[in-house]
Image (cartoon, rainbow, N blue to C red; front, top):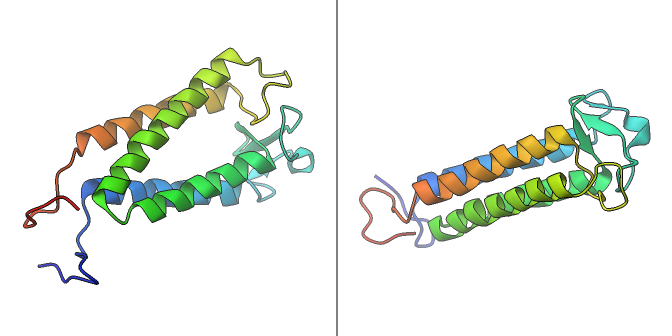
Length: 153
């Protein structure tokens, strides 16, 4: 049984849950990118650019800009998890953004001015996985509504 809050159900669709989980994960990643020890080479964490040689978990190249983008992307996921339609938009749209970042990482040489994000090979693979997972979940969950409801949220 669901109890409405201002016309909304406490029950969430799978798309809403996925959007919320991705949001939490991106916020966690964004915060961890600012933690020395979890981010190695912290003394060379720069605002942006390939010169930022800081590595989250010793693997993923990060910068202050990169970490802020993760935080903003995370908060966007939490906000868009409010409705099924917004959650699907976040999953599919965000997945497309990550697939574009994957292509960006393949096209732009890693040690060039064009690599302002910055990304390395590990980031590229992660962006591909995230992009496919997010788009896939957004499409998989479709416009199904919470069981027992007559219209999609």
